[in-house]
Length: 460
Image (cartoon, rainbow, N blue to C red):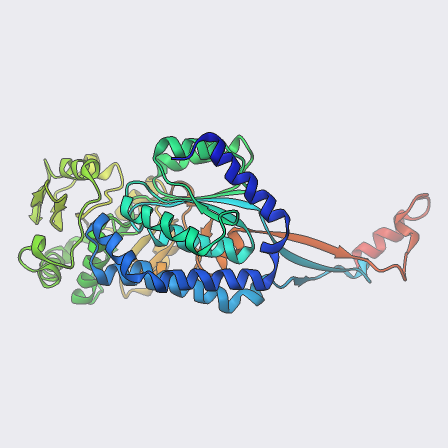
C-alpha cells in the first residue's frame, strides 16, 4: 500500500503531466481511448476469471454486463469524440453584435475514480472512458472487496498507460481516507449512500465537485394490465442477475391484489426455468461477495414468510433466489437497500397506496412499472421522482448510452454513460469575442442622456 508521500507524489506528477497540455490534444485522447479498448479485448479471459473468483459471476453475465458494456462505451467515445470536443456556438443578443459566443469544453485536471465491488471492472473502466475523452489525468481506486478484479486492474493499467497519466491505488478504508485528504479536480464515486456522505464531506473541504452513484430501494409496481409471463421473466432476470447485487435491481414488488397469486405462480415458474430445482448447482447463478454481506442478508430471512427459496450455504456465501411475502413496512428488510437475492412482495388494492409509500421514502435510483395502461404510466411518471423509470422492463436502461445514468436526492448526484460521461469530466467554458471594428460608446461614462436610449434598445 502506498504511503502518504507516494499518493501525494502520484497527484503531483499527474498535475505536471496535465500542465504539459498533451491530454487536451484530440489525437492523444482518441489514441488513449483506443488503447483502453485494446486493454479490454486483450484481457477478456483474465477479466472473466477475476469476476468469477470474486463473485462466482457466470461467464455470460461477466461478458455482457462488464466487458461488452465497457467496449460499447469506449467505441461510442472514439466515434463521437470529434463532435463532443467541438466548441458549440451560442446565441448573442442583437444589442451586443458584432460579438460572437461559444461554449468550449475543457478538462477538469486530475480526477479520482472510486469503484464498487458488485460490477468491479466496468464501474472503474466506464467512468475512466469519460475522464480520458474529456482530457483528464486519473487515479483509479478499485474496490478492495472484489480483490481479484482490483489486483487485475492494478496489474493491467500500468502495462497500457503512463503512470503519470493514469494509475491505480489499491487498498482499504485507510487508503481511501488518505486519498480523500488530497485535492482533486473531481471525485467520481460508486457505492453506498453511507460512504457517499463521507466522500462528499471530505470533498467539501477542498471544494471538490463530486459525482455520487449511489443506490436505494427501487420499487417495482405491477398492475393488472400486463403480459404475465413476460412480466415475471423480466422481474426475475432484473432481480437475480449477479445474485441481486445490482444497485438498480428491483428491491421490492408492489403487486395489485387481483393479480398477486397469478404473478407469484409465474415468478416461481421463471425461477425454476432460469436456475433449476437446485440453484446452488446452477452455473448461471452468482454468490454473495463476502461474509459480512452474507450475514446481513441471512438476518433478513429470520422472520420472513418464505414463498420459495431461503436456502443458504455459509461455506460458499450462497443464498438461493428467494421470494418473501407478508412484509410490514416497519420490518428491517424495508428499512435499507437489500442488495441481494431476496424479493419482498407487497400487495396493494389502490395505486395511491403504492405511490404514497414510495413518495414517503428517499428517492430511488430506479423505479419500475409494469402496466399497459397509458394513463397509469403517466400518473406514476408525474407523481414520483427517481433516477430513472422503466416501463414494462427492468435494469436494461443502464445499457442505453443516450440515457444519462444517475440518481436524485439520496440515490446520487450527477450522471454518466455516453456523452454524459464526457460532460461529467468537463468544464463548459463560456467564451465571448468582440471585434475592434465597431465600438459604440453608449455603455461608457459619462452616462448623462444615455439611459432613455438604452431602455429603448433593451425593449426591442
